[in-house]
Image: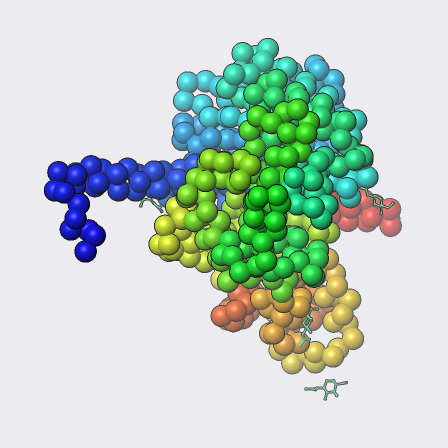
Length: 485
Ligand SMILES: *[C@@H]1O[C@H](CO)[C@@H](O)[C@H](O)[C@H]1NC(C)=O
Ligand SMILES: *[C@@H]1O[C@H](CO)[C@@H](O)[C@H](O)[C@H]1NC(C)=O
Ligand SMILES: *[C@@H]1O[C@H](CO)[C@@H](O)[C@H](O)[C@H]1NC(C)=O
Ligand SMILES: *[C@@H]1O[C@H](CO)[C@@H](O)[C@H](O)[C@H]1NC(C)=O
Ligand SMILES: *[C@@H]1O[C@H](CO)[C@@H](O)[C@H](O)[C@H]1NC(C)=O
């Protein structure tokens, strides 16, 4: 009974220590941030998002733009905000005057007493992705410099830092482990200039790390290495053993920074997460395993071998986004810890204390009436008018749950058709004309959902933020009809 051996006089101290540990742990969730992307047919209202963050002790949010209407709902909440600048704005910001106007309109205007707590500006989003063929190579760094300069001149430079969210593909490690890492050859000089600038301005390096994508892109990737519970053959790098991809990846960046002469630039993980649908490895079971392993690791505040200590992270993502590009894969619309409607998908424990419970979902969510679009009763599923209509519905809406490994892959032919029709109908705000499909479809009041495969109901829109994709397709239809007549 080693326990009984502790002299009575030491008990209070011992309790203090335990209490202190508990307080530190409880605080952990408060240093978690989350990304909120809004590429969906309908988005949650920002006040609902603010409430969700508060209810789950999430204290930081990263946005992908700086929409004034959205940002103002974060005023007075204490929630730390990272604004985003989309890649298509970068070339404009190579002119200092434009950067100055950007800061004035999108930052300074929120800087009143009780305004928004803006802490970072993310300039571009993964601008050096190989798939962009170098399109943003000339504009990104000048835009970063101009935005920071404008922040400095507005007297905000000490509090607000500009940085660039980078994909982990800006550095390579080769097969020799993290210590062989360095920035990618084709952008190395540019990256050295950027990280030197970040160091001079005490700004962080933002990196997005995705073990899921390593697994998705490489069928030989050792599955266990993507998670945090060991079981995979460790990567030996000198004296260091890496047992998970996150540590190895982050340390490859740490080595790259070291080799660029900027070892002290702070690293922030700008995106990390696991999708739950649209691929054989994208499901709630693996997402739960990934997140809980990650939160337990974060709660120890040990960091990685080369970057010890607490690491700030932004989870990707808050909610699903049914209008995102699926160029990367069908899973791309399913990164949410919460569904499109703010419902939690699985139990987890942000504090890493093995005490998983369902996170608190969005409150006061307003749906459109409980009605769905389905294949009309009596129509034969082999009717040859069906394939082109499905094709149309799926291209204009979201059928990513129907594919192999998706949550709706086993609902049968009839279910497949109705699912596609319904997605189109809901994403078009239950417009009656969006449930016609040449007379093949009908509106039904009986919920066609199955336990594995919910048929979504649209959210009420706010009429303020119009979905760019839908506006665009409406515009195209309009132009096409003009051309025809
Ligand atoms: C948030 O933190 C408060 C105070 O530390 C705690 O009482 C509450 O249970 C936490 N909520 C969640 C969802 O973790
Ligand atoms: C402010 O941000 C919005 C949204 O990101 C953008 O459309 C607008 O052009 C920006 N304002 C200026 C003056 O650059
Ligand atoms: C990059 O180049 C490839 C091959 O030439 C092309 O298919 C792709 O559309 C290009 N991407 C961009 C963003 O320009
Ligand atoms: C549907 O059409 C196929 C092919 O034309 C036919 O073989 C089948 O019997 C039809 N099913 C029903 C329920 O009418
Ligand atoms: C439903 O559609 C998916 C995706 O196109 C396909 O993989 C699946 O085989 C279909 N199921 C049936 C029964 O037609």
